[in-house]
Length: 254
Image 1 (cartoon, helix red, strand yellow):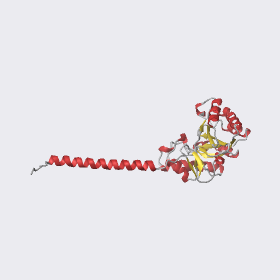
Image 2 (cartoon, helix red, strand yellow):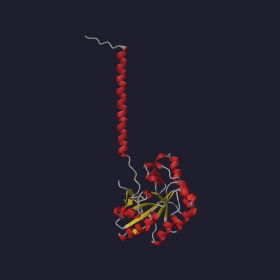
Image 3 (tube, helix red, strand yellow):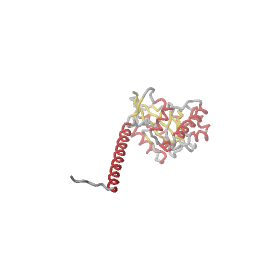
Image 4 (cartoon, one colour):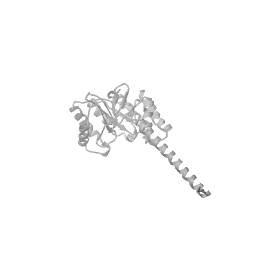
């Protein structure tokens, strides 16, 4: 009978091999579990547009910094008898309270655009909550109305942002038509882009401080109406009841 002698060094090598094998198995199991959890985690998607057969759409303005054009935009909207939605940053609300009251007085929706125009996906949960609550409080203090609409700055969101919005019984709203007015396209280029992508339930993004938006706005309104669409605030285009959003961000009632 052959006797195999294992040296101390050999024992150490065997132990090392067993240890490496055990670690590899643990990592592999952990990775597999993580993949399964990731695959089963539901991705929360904001509302980009609304599922409807009616020829209705919404125009929205984001206001974060300047205020030179706000009254001009409001006058144009009055002239064309159109109501829209303004998403306001809390800092903007503090700087221009009279404009906030004027937007509300003229019958437009006012939504929350965060308190400081923060990158919402890059902040801690406590700060995330504060961005929602502080802006809501500032708007409500001036208008006396509860804020139900939210648009994340830069269009950045993740599950935490959407869930925080849902927890506050607010709608997280993006857009399916970006005018890109902040890049200073010509008014006709803005009209062409909107005409090409317009569909029932569309939500259009504009800004209150873009250079060519006041000149483009009447043309945009006329082009939309020429296609037989009615322009309403986002609060009126969103149907009431339980809903879900598909992979394209279409809001669909359950």
